[in-house]
Image (cartoon, rainbow, N blue to C red; front, side, top):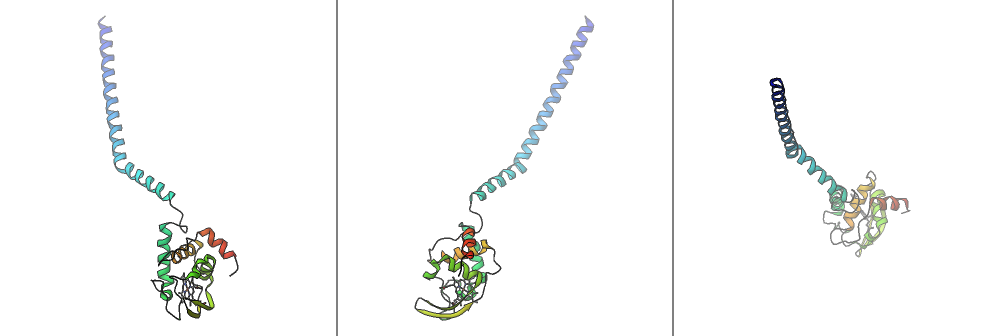
Length: 175
Ligand code: HEC
């Protein structure tokens, strides 16, 4: 009888110890999960949601704001010395791109950027017989798309965006 009570007490003690250990493990787990979600976890969640947002936007070189920004940067670095930042050009030397209806021809714009252009043209009543070098010869199709989109959509122009796929097709056509 006494022995039975002893083993019963022992068992109860062991069970109590197990419960305490179990509770400790739970508390440690809880703290660990809390620590992860409040630091790395939330950072991971944030980067996940950023990825989701960027995935919804059009790829570079297509039609989004990113493309216009890239196009503007490319234009200011490679084109504005002649055509001017405001797209007005210099009368008699460099034709304006602002309000220039020729830019409605996306193929002409894309091929001019890639291959340059020369020969007599008349823009807004002014004759130009000059040569534009192949400024975009080293540009990727995405960069050509961005700068073509920029010049067709800026300074009051609204000839529509040009995608990277468009560039590939238009470059395959003859000038
Ligand atoms: C060194 C000066 C110079 C630079 C730099 C330059 N262009 Fe030109 N661009 C010209 C000249 C000159 C013409 C006209 C050529 C002619 O007389 O046929 C021209 C023509 C054009 C045309 C055709 C206009 C039309 O009405 O036929 C487009 C479009 C154009 N440029 C876009 C660009 C873009 C975009 C860039 C930058 C990637 C650029 N140009 C850089 C000098 C330049």
